[in-house]
Amino acid sequence: MKTTRSKNNRRDFIKSTGILGAGMLMPSINFAASEPLPQEGSMHLFGKREGYTKEVSILVSMMDWMRDTVMREVRDINQKELDFLLDDDSNSVGAMLMHLAATERYYQLDTFTGVDKSKLDFGVDDDMWEAASRLGDQGRKAFKGKSPSFYLDKLSEVRAYSLKELKNRDDVWLYESVPFFGNQPTNNYCKWFHVVEHESNHNGQIRIIKKRAV
Image 1 (cartoon, rainbow, N blue to C red):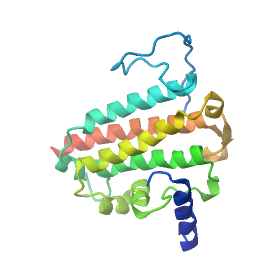
Image 2: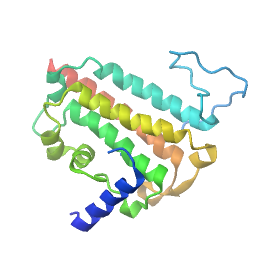
Image 3: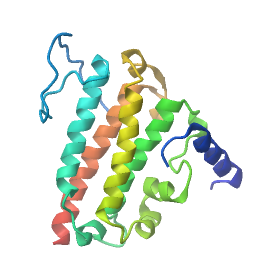
Image 4: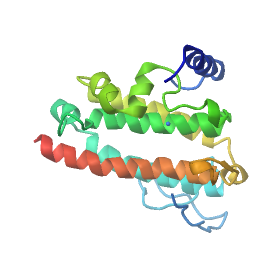
């Protein structure tokens, strides 16, 4: 159970940093420095991206591809599909979309700010992100009756910050390692690929819930 002091420490940290509001590694892809950038709309061509280093470009390619896949599922979602619950213990599509944003935000705090893991919490700062991170009863109460744009805007805001910060990181940073998952050596590449994998996992759930909501 959180103490008031720990909540205040996290709240002060967020205010001081000015931040918004949290597998297997992919193999390295070699491409010539002179290789042209993928043309606009070429989502399936992983490679160099404007403003990013070589390996960070591959990460951004994966992030863009998976986010586009999720967006195809929810871009035209209606309120019934957004709030539908399979049963009393399940999560709605809306809650899962917020969960994706919260998970990415968690890794922003961890990898962009260097906050000590002992002070890093999935709730991070306020009740909304707490509910989005933990889901369950909190998520079912907090994320009901909100418009599709509420969730899509949150995802967009969080992703914009990630892409902005990744432009300030290089390949050396990507491979920096600290104890993390199960206290095992974990580099930033693995953490951010987990953000991609996490969206893939929940995208399958979103598809199932949408079909059942009809």
